[in-house]
Image 1 (spheres, rainbow, N blue to C red):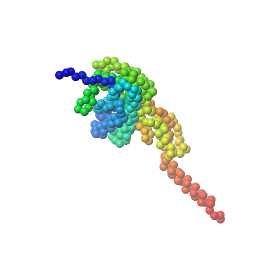
Image 2 (cartoon, rainbow, N blue to C red):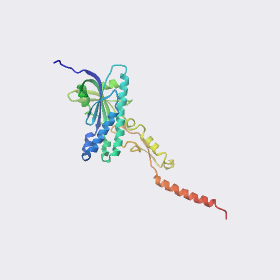
Image 3 (cartoon, rainbow, N blue to C red):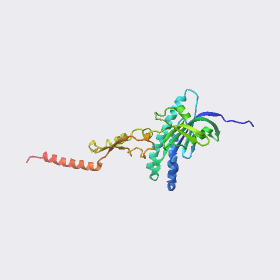
Image 4 (cartoon, one colour):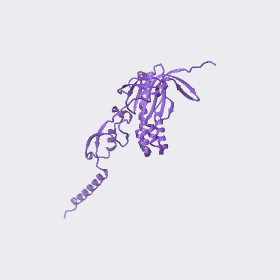
Amino acid sequence: MPHLRPSTHKALLVIADISGFTQFMKSHENTANHAMHVVVELLRAVISAAAPPLKLAEVEGDAAFFYALCNEDGEVTRELVAIKKQVMSFFRSFYQTLHRLCALYPCARNARDLRLKVVIHAGEVALEHIHGFDKLFGMDVILTHRLLKNSVPSQEYVLMTEAAYNRLGDFHQLEPERQTEYCEDIGVVETVVFFPPARLIHAAKRPDERLRADVKPFLPSAYLLDKTPGRFAASTNGYQLPEPFHLSACAQTFETVWLVPLQTRRQHDCATHVAGQGRRELSCGPSP
């Protein structure tokens, strides 16, 4: 029987992993069905944000493993740009779904502590077709998974190996931070880390712009009583998330607005209107 060697391909490997998954599941032992539904929906949201050239290889517990075969033609640059956009879309889709699920399932509110991290590596893989599924093999596949355990002091980031960074280059004009990791059975790996800021991954508009747009049609400017610089905490349609894990991911500051209750304002306006009507009737009545 001849010895068969699988063909190898140059590929870009991407893992999107949910940070805080284990703690979240442990804290919801009594509501495990809701907790599992939250995680499944978050994974679906990330997977739905992927498109060619990225292909889903596997769903691995709380992570989705993607790959893109690297072609050596004129479409390479366009494909790399598409991959970088999709990685950023992973974050946006993740947080949009997270906010919706937290509103639906009050018992799973500490799901707000969940975060997303992405690891990207470029290398060679062996591709085998097994019972209708494409299975990836090789040391570069192992390395990509080992890098999920790293020394990055954050739960929300994009980590690239040097090989991936050389291919992808600039990542949405974010400042790269170089870091050295040690992977068991592999050795030292040079990496580049990016921390996507909240303005790019949590919402299309700044939080203060959304808040002002929501309340402006209903509230008179005379009732903006106090303006104090502060940190955005919640909005009518925003993301109620805890403080960011990294300084570069800080949300934009805004002017806190204190408002008089609308009910009090309405009662005051009605009383003024009635009093005004009475005065006009007296002044316009017949002369004695």
